[in-house]
Image (cartoon, rainbow, N blue to C red):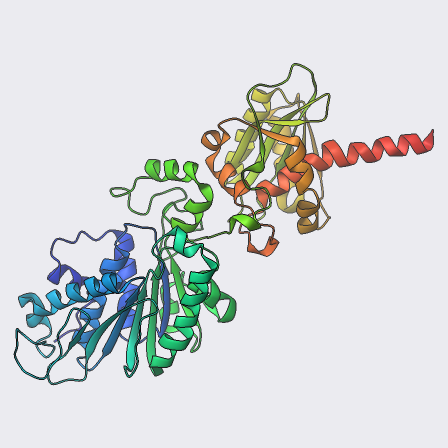
Amino acid sequence: MSKLSFADFATTVYPFLELQPFHRAYYRVLEAFAEGRIRRLVITMPPQHGKSVGATTLLPAYLMGLDPDCRVAIASYSGTLASKFNRRVQRILDSREYAELFPATTIKQGTKPAGYIRTSDEVEVIDHLGSLLSVGREGSLTGNRVDCFILDDLYKDALEANSPLIRANCWEWYTSVVRTRMHNHSRELIVFTRWHEEDLIGELQRREPFVELTRWSQLDEVPEQGWLHLNFEALKASPATELDPRAEGEALWEEQQSAELLCTKRRLDPLRFEAMYQGHPSVREGLLYGVQLGEYDHLPREIVRRGAYTDTADTGDDYLCSLAYEVDADGVIYITDAVYTREPMEVTETMVAQMLERAGVRQVFVESNNGGRGFARAVQRLVPMVKVEWFHQSANKEARILSNAATVLHLVRFPKGWNLLWPELYAHLTTYRRLFSANRWHDAADVVTGIVEREVVDRTKNRLRRVRFL
């Protein structure tokens, strides 16, 4: 008999499944895990995208079919939910389709055969060592040796994930119960929707090697003691990969949760969206700006100057950020227009030029690092009436951003409703972390910092120089 792929198994026992491209990639990775090619696997995925159907319902049945001696354990945030998964697996094991695929893997029917266990929490494979055990977080596994452990959502909701006590108890249970039930060849699968940066996955990332899964060849290159990590973003924001070739901004499952719906969710709470839907959790207490960034309803009458500041993208994953602004007599800076995109330079040159015209800007500063000078020259040709001044930024980015954060909060204002005007800019600024290395993108923070450096720091220094000279 030729090898039965996990995707084919899934659609045979669940013929109602309609697998999307990302499901097929997901199932291919789960198949490698079932075959033992991956020993330690973490998969993060948005809510309501079929995470548990694949990993906690279909996978245990597939594992026990491939190896009737495999002892599988399922854990979730409650014993009730873990038992529900167990019953779903048992219904698959009972099905006619499963019996045709894996005739050696059978379980107790009614009271026969006597001596075998079959409850909502535990079931044994007849004439083999295999079994399926379900347990809630902090439940006991005394005396049970586990070949394959599947942990699915160990936190019920944000309230639990935000509780230091529950997170600490979860970590204690994982280290003292889960890890002690495993042997040299045991496998672990953790499938989560992320809630908090210090959840179980976050703690493991700080303590053990994690490798991001982006190429299919990595399935055969997994380090012995490391974790392989696959993250599916609800809205594609990271570069395309072999496993997830979507274009930027494309929804993971458009028919289920459209890009429009996801953008609406992001506007409601960018921080939670980044955690639950994008797999990049942050702690509100660790934010540099948060939602404290100032807003305005109307521009003041007395505007003393207009300007713009542009930071071109250093790499293919970076954003070009260009902000137009106006300054009033009190030195308050009002952001009036923005370009924030990862489009190529030949596109952004025109976008920035058009923004400068709309905003009535007559001077723009362009960081000339990594191609910025060529960009500045191109913009100058498009809008000859604007003075385009390029410069090299040699100061340390981390020191600049952190030391000017208070000034940004005090003096910079964004138009009311800017979360709707520029949702990505809003999300990246309001979720920017004080821990510099924890941030994926620095482009937006770098530009607002550059603006206050030009409009506040440099002008203050110039005034002091004039006073000393006099």
